Length: 161
Image 1 (cartoon, rainbow, N blue to C red):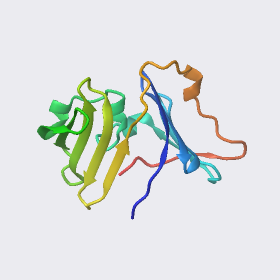
Image 2: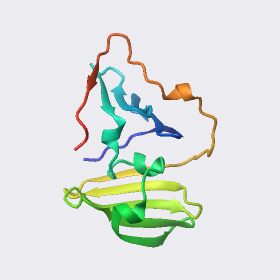
Image 3: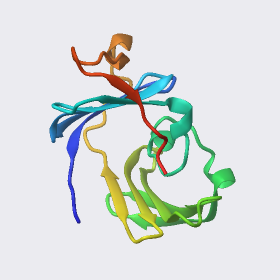
Image 4: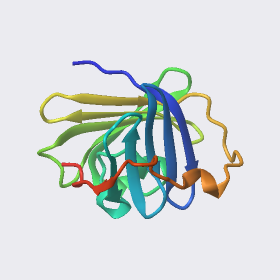
């Protein structure tokens, strides 16, 4: 099964992230520093997960927010040249050998991440591609506050497996 989604990603330290989807429209993932919020327009509920439960290497959040030390958390690190004067850094996350077989980061010479690819043990591949980066863009703190739509309950969701 192939699925493509797209949208705008906003980041703000410490630990704030907003993925505003344009495809599918109305889908949102927000990390406010304490909780992660998941909602798609028309859903019967908003899912909320403590941010601390998302802190694993399968999630691109760790890389994008600078929450990882690759040399301590991955084995078999290898660096190879990639197109457009970029590099691909690959390895396997420690302690996740049964779930993730390979993780690859495409980075510029300055260290900006332009792509993330995660290959899982079941053969599933998740790819993230980042374009149009605007470093140090002014993003108001209020952007990272989630309010459930009227009448939509918030439920505590289980952490990702």
